[in-house]
View 1 (cartoon, rainbow, N blue to C red):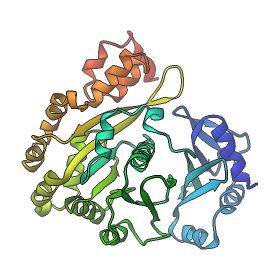
View 2: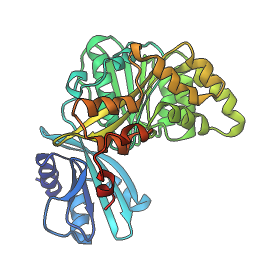
View 3: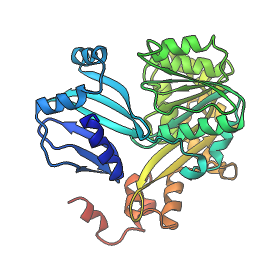
View 4: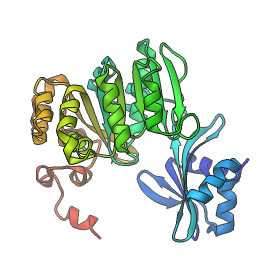
Length: 359
């Protein structure tokens, strides 16, 4: 067994999500949100290179040496898959591996709000799942694709870098494409996808302007497009999409987005009591006032749309946080740290609780 596989198994056995390897430090893992050592031996440059080189084909290794960055997927058969990123930093080579759950978790297992299922039944439009790095966006999207695959007959194309979740054959036809392996870029895969008769496109990352433009185009042409962004609420997501474009194009983009925006699911992970983590959500669904709000650039009004759409399953992030505090899932301090309106949570804190956390 490759030496790195032993470390990855140790991390998973300890309940970790990410393995961090760096010259001058022992191997560390993120466990319940905090980084902890999982072995005693400090890695020197030679030991680290041996660890990571063992699992990479020659072609990819040369690409890493040349570009100083590499994304890859690594699998321990029958155990788990990992998304790896190799990088260079001040001390030399380094790597981070994130565990991709071997089993695709369902809506019920993830305890996702029922309202998110409505987005799975749409025939067209853009649905954005957002949140900071490591907030579980990929896991939520995998559950949504699995729900569609289990209940509906659709042609689904996923474009990822690297492929994370591999979906088994159920009712839908699912084509997985990996950037760098099966296609040159997100943009070229999206251009090709328009000719592949898809019902649903999943775009792993909407980073570059061209990718965002093409995703909007596909959504406007009658496909259902799922994408991800690193924003933490619905208004910021709309702003991010519009501001990705040059100022001269922004009016046209507002009109386009107003016509095709079908929903936003913002997700944060919170520390759970007594241990583990749980997801909280902000959900924006289609609403008669939404198109006009986006078109006219009155993005601040999206909060009111969400507040007024509670009966449809829409919810603000702060409301989700408050609900989790009230049902005893998370502590008030954790909610306060994540909340937009901190004043609403300040009264729930114990005296001196914030001072404690700043030391």
